[in-house]
Image (cartoon, rainbow, N blue to C red; front, top):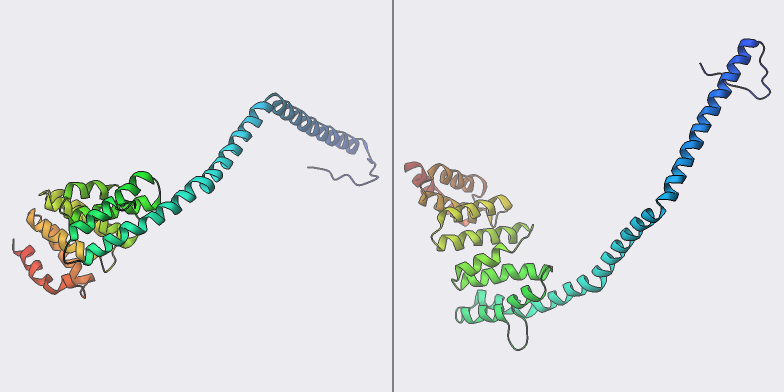
Amino acid sequence: MATYKKRGFKPKNQVEEQQVDEQESTTAEVFNTLDESASKSEEWVSDNQNYILGIIGVVAVAVLGYLGYMQFVQNPKETDAANEMYYPQQYFDQALVSTTAKDSLFTLALNGADGKYGFLNIIEEYSGTKAANLANYSAGMSYMNMQKYQEAITYLEDFSSDDAILGALAKGGLGDAFMQLGQADDALGYYESAIAHSGNKYTAPKFLYKAGVTALELNENEKALKFFQRIKDEFSGSDEARSIDSFLGMAKSE
């Protein structure tokens, strides 16, 4: 049991004197150990000073390099790429609503004109930027509309997005492209990915329907039934739900 030593304390007998001596001895040992540990730590720091400073220097250079890269390289690159997207995006939007010359407008969107970049130029010149990523989506969809399905797959596979709508549309677009190429198994996989990406009321019923129809074509009726049933249960107000009872009947009867 530790003994608290008051100021001016004097041992009353030999036992208390021995306890005090032992306590002082223990305290001295503790401080000696701490001194030795401190000395060893100081010695280690001294012996490895260059190494420690080197590590600190490398970290500092890396941090400053990253900050400098972001400020003077990446951020201006992102800005330039975003500005370049304005020109081809106009042609892309026009092509989507045009009733004539669609292919010509999509071609302008892809390749640019009059010294302006198209989607393909932006992908090449501004690789790693958000604009280049978006250009992959737009290029893929341009090729889809031009019925160049292999090219569409190439660019859509390079696009990635957590956005509920855009991410699902890209995966669904891949499904459409594979379906057009006669690869129904691959198409179904991408439709399922599109459904899993987001359950929003715009894309989910669209790709549930396509997945169901594709599953029927592959004679996977149980899977088709689940897709159609989800439309009926969860998206009863969608366009796809209008004729869903017929498809449910087809899936059950096969």
